[in-house]
Image 1: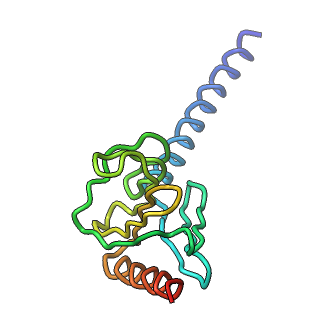
Image 2 (image 1 turned 180 degrees about the vertical axis):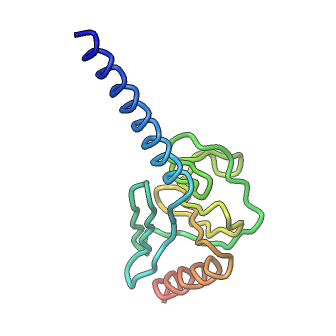
Length: 145
């Protein structure tokens, strides 16, 4: 019986080791992958991201939009953060609490004032973020006509 106990203990150590490696790999994947961005439709802006719920903003609820390169994101008060993404509810001195969908590698942002508060989003590259801003601006301009 003692031999059986040792085999079980040895198998248990291998199982714990395998589990530890598996958890480490999952965490590494979560911290180093993902994307946030938006698509402009004819009636709304749809924001999608990996690891955080999507958001849709009808065009009539967008009060203003601006392109920013000097934006202080502040601190996360709820959401998801990794090496590549900052998602969720944030707080800074300028807006107070607001929603952020950001790729950390890009320091350009589209800032939208909506009827429900501020929403900030960017793409992986500054050029794509600038193009997103132009599309949202055109959507708002259509509404005003």
